[in-house]
Length: 522
Image (cartoon, rainbow, N blue to C red; front, side, top):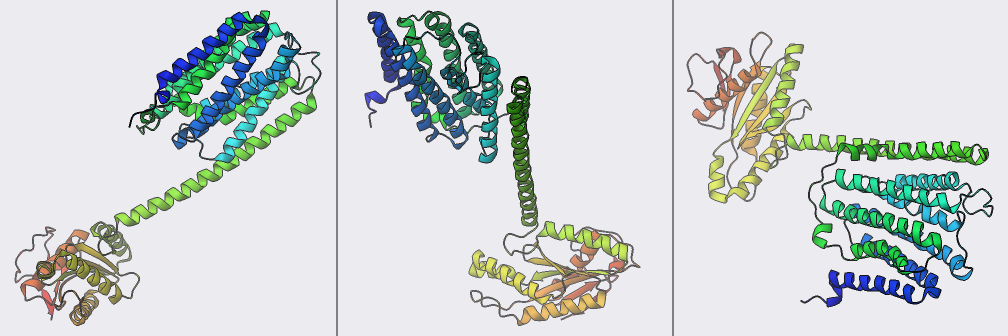
């Protein structure tokens, strides 16, 4: 499907350039209507850019939605400022000589940009803390305007307001600071493609705004000139509007891994502290002439910072609790057999180590049963592996129901073998339990899909306090007993006394020796 010619970026760029050139031409041809043309074009471009940024906020990755909304807020301030200043300059032909209410909106236009630059790279995750930061930033802007301009915003007393001449340099300093901070975020910030795309155009916008506003303030507006240079004010808004409307989807939605620099991490973590310190410092500057106002702002800064710290602490505690729960869950999953739902070999090894240490400490006996399902391969060969899996799950369930002591531990040892740890159980007790298990399994009806009897072979070994041995040797003894049960006809219990081993811990299933004392049950 062919794209409409109007949707092509270079077409829109050409149209935008044509509109700016037309503005410049009209100003040159009709100097008497220069203010009307300039303010109309300026406000329309600012409004278009704000709407474009709001639209882009709904069509971008979630991590950048707040960034685009803040850019839109900045353009909205410029639109309001231009709309406020327009009547005086157009209809009253008033040349600005002191700071006015319109200057407050111009001065505050970059506050959303500063918030945007210092946003965490993962995006706003807690709206409440972002709201608190925004309130602090707005308060800082209000007090900074008061300190620099010499008058409170929205008041009618301009007696001590800053003259227009030094006001130009205040704006120049503000623009330079914003451009430098934006450049730092772009060059030292994330490598994530979507973030870099946004800050590339934000840097372009702030740089264009600093240059064009500087030219206008020092050469055009200063002498009330209405010539083609007025059209310079349209360029930054036009550039940002085009960037918002025609962001390439492949770049804007890239998910490449981000790498955060130390400087960006420092800014992310220190931003609320800087805002609070700036608010306190500005309040101190105002306190000389307006103590009550300064005290109110300092108290407000303390309240806001306390609320933010409490909110973040609560979130950290919630995240830590969730992380601990996830870790516990992952640890449990790592120790469970995915097929049967009981402990796996890793879980068995950990539990054996714990029980062995406790047995050594308490000097109480510890017994181990190794249980093997007889002729399990026939089930897989005859009915398929799916039925074999159901068969194993059934066996695990029957084994779990056969033990009533909480201390007894059952695990899938591997394949069709199961292991049972019996703490504080001597050899006769373990032999009796193994015989009961064999009888229970022989009497079990099995599963409907596999019409075959269920029999098991059981190997038993026990450690007593008189026997020097290791955990590996109790496994080796049970393994030899299980091998003996299979060799002697299956469906039986064999016991290998631990003291008959000579220290070998290899699981090589050797042939039975007359020196190994065994006890059988069938």
